[in-house]
Image 1: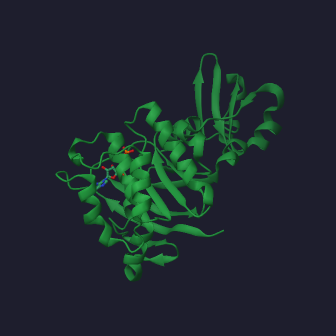
Image 2: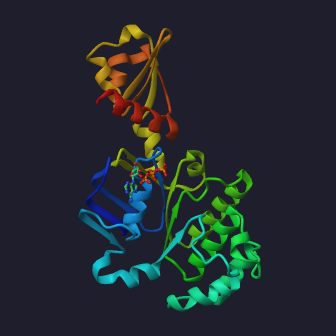
Image 3: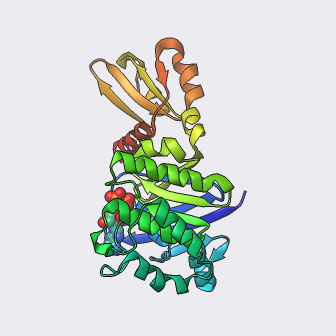
Length: 289
Ligand SMILES: Nc1ncnc2c1ncn2[C@@H]1O[C@H](COP(=O)(O)OP(=O)(O)OP(=O)(O)O)[C@@H](O)[C@H]1O
């Protein structure tokens, strides 16, 4: 399967934050959701993928090409979508099109008109008057009009109302039908991923925790509930993190088979949500420092 994005052993340091030996791939033709808590490095990773930041070491390649030799070609093939205004504020969308169009060899006016109509965007209103949702749609319209093969979005659904969020996810779902496009987007809202994500990439504290097919996550992890008498220094090692209370413990494991062998029917196991996995992974990292 072709990788559209490939990061290999990427390091990037800021004062107080490090992206550490970060390797990941994004597969062509799928939607990959990029999840992690606040300040764990999602935007930094996206900026590295967009060449808005350069790694201290390691490599970033898109479509199998590096930015050093192929920046122009790569940029033609990517659409970067986000809700902040990346356009000139004092122009209309029609004027914006005239400014942007010459930069893209694949620009298609028919597609632009189609999405302006579909998204009900005003062509003659100044962009500075656009709402967050309209800005997102305008940004997506530009990406689709230059026939971007890879659409990268940083928190596209944050700050959007539930109806528009759902509409946006439907639009993205429709875009994926020809199998040629790839979407990579970061989000805090894990329930959005249920609707469209094929793969999930999870980052925590600047480290790549996993990239997995969505359905595999439920298979690989389990929430385990049981009485406190079952825990000791040995059994606790089977868990990523444990929440203890007077009534018993709740824990996350990625060693389902071992937990079954050790505890048998003495514990209850449940399928975890993505939020469970994020919560317990953060807790586990804190418990093990
Ligand atoms: N240019 C920069 N200079 C210094 N520190 C930076 C810079 N950019 C990001 N950081 C720091 O790197 C860390 C990771 O930031 P990043 O924006 O990548 O996180 P994030 O996962 O996108 O967070 P959020 O979900 O809250 O937006 C933060 O501690 C941030 O303060």
